[in-house]
Amino acid sequence: MSDTAQAYDRRRMLTGTPWKEVLIFSGPIMIGYLLQILYGTADMIILGHEVGPDSLAAIGSATTLMTLFTCLSWGLSAGSNAVMARYNGADDENRLRNSAMTSLLVSMITGAAVTVLSLILCEPILRYVMGVPEDIMGMACEYCWIYALGFVSMFGYNAVASMLRSVGDSRSVLYVLAATSGMNLVLDVLFIMVLDMGVIGAASTTVICQVVSLIASYAIMTRRFELFSFRRTDVRIHHEHLREIVDAGMTMALQQAIIYGSMVILQQAVNSYGADMMASFAVERRLETFFRLPISAIASGTVTFAGMHYGAKMVDRLSKGVRQLLAASLLMTIAMSVICIVSAGPLVSVFNLSGTPYDYCVEHTRVALLLFPMFALYFPILSVFQGMGRPRLSAAIVVLELVIRIVCIYSLGGDGPFGYTIIWWNMLFGWAIAMVITFILYRRVMMKTENEATETAT
Image (cartoon, rainbow, N blue to C red; front, side, top):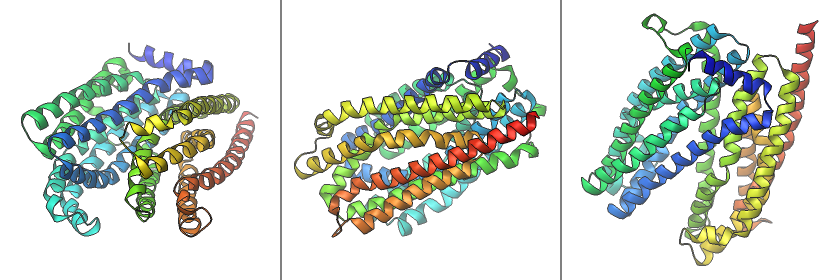
């Protein structure tokens, strides 16, 4: 299939039942997220058994640093997806093609720059900023240095994935992730268990899989979509698209970096309550990554849906579709929450917690699940803002939510009215206020967009 596949996907997204099309589109994205979580966990399990706790501590510190750099890749990918989806919705193939090439080149050039920065800065940051103990410093640095060599491939793969999603193809990304997840597991066993390469083996496995992901996804994309079969003369940055891609991408990257930085501050508060709370919080955070999967997948599909409809100037259908998607997000979350609240104890037991950490984690998990419907209602709307070319609204709301949560933890916890339970009840204040503000801003944005569409029509 070439451009026929593209036209079919575009027609389905713009004419089919909105909630069905977005769920069909988002299903592979959710499975892909799950695969990434699982094979990241596999690295830790194998290293923990074969090398010991020091290797886990080293990789934990190194991963914290590397995630700050990868925020840039995630942001560029999300911003590019929104820009290209709008051109696809407007049926402007020339601008879609040019913006895709610009996105790919900018991403890979940025990946190369980040590689150089990582090689130079990782040791000073690990040693003087993060305070990594000297006995694991060597392993942490080795992991960072090797991991950094895969940044060009990672940035390139995320750019290709955003191209595919912008034209309605989320399955090809899933096929690549499924294949590389299996490869990751095989290479982990070979490098760590057979060849005894330790953290170097874990980092090397990740780099190899990133290179294969880029090559495979690009080959699939060019084969399926003639639109993206670039020739040598096409390889250049189109300055008319550079600004909007960088603007949207950097805004999303900043949002991700703020989220991650805020999690560090939250972790500091958790640490102040002792080892039992630290163990409980670590397990709940791992469970929460699974609880967020349906909402995150719907939000990813909503970026493409909103971008295409905004580009096609189908404002009424966009508004109708958003209502359907919020209803689907809410119903799925309520169903998941009811099941997991009842089974919170067995879920926590899987991680071998007992005593006080177990009690903390069960209560934390149940409160989080009780509050998740609020998150399910407002988080997809942030994707609507991104798809409509208003990423700063999304970023501002995320920052506000995190600031509120941090303020609540430090002002209402400890000797305050909530005590240690503020570690989980802070979500109530952050999510509730963010939800209200999100709906107010969404209504204003839609009214303004409808007025603009009416004026253009007349």
